[in-house]
Image (cartoon, rainbow, N blue to C red; front, side):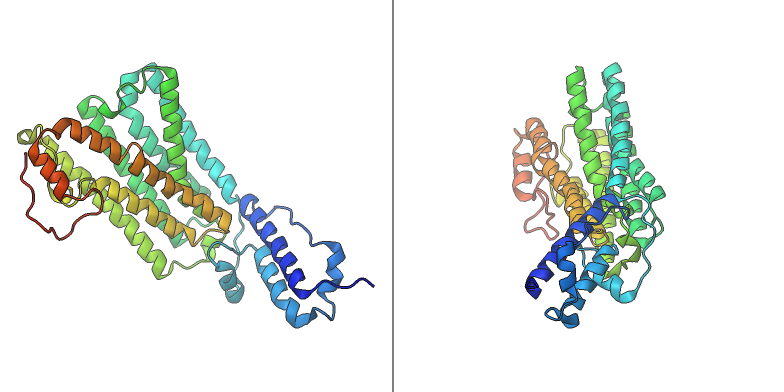
Length: 363
């Protein structure tokens, strides 16, 4: 008879086979066809050379992987030990991501049509549709989710809907009062420019919503307790939403005062850092990813969800966030010495809770 393979190689082959099946199930749901273990090696699983003691841990590992447990957050071992039931998956995580894409890209497509027909109206509804699409996607994902009442899923959904509804309505009202959005002037003059803007907006929205979307369609979320880390991450998400709302309101009040015309906002949170709104955004989406990651089904899903906070951070730090805001502020107030003092004394993003020097004078 042929010489049986060593225990080490059988373990490795079992592990690779289990990883492939786990990843396929993660991507395509519980109905994905499993890859059978090579038939030529099956007899050796029960052979005397491997033995029950050597092969049992491998079989257990494969069994709970094929049962839907995770490699992303180590939930499989807890599920196997607790015997918690696995709910019907319904829609796989990446099918759920496709549904989210349909909602977000569809609403942004409507915005593209509006802006091409009337560029001035496009400026007014850009943030309403772009940001509102994220909130709508979160609602749709939660409604379809098989774990819609799970505390982790509920917290993530409420946070995204709260953030999206608040920010979309605030930016829409601001655009109406100003007669448009000066940041978007020139974006909707031609169809190629408008199409590029709305494609970018839709991509931003879809990636931003991805952690919450994948969490809604994760079977692991229903059997993973929130725990202290999840509660802490959720608390940071809502803290970020609150500080962003406060920062927007403080700047709105400051700019609404005629006495502050041609002055930059340096009160409240704006005295602690120059961009508290963007700092809050970074806290929100990084913390939301941390909240969602522990409830995802596999490493592939965790890696996909990580694109959300990474994309947001890239836009804020290197794209249309901080660099654009700094450029506009320098153009308006750069010639003022008091503004230069404000820039030197006030951090860019990380707030200075305890100022080391007196607050700079206003312009």
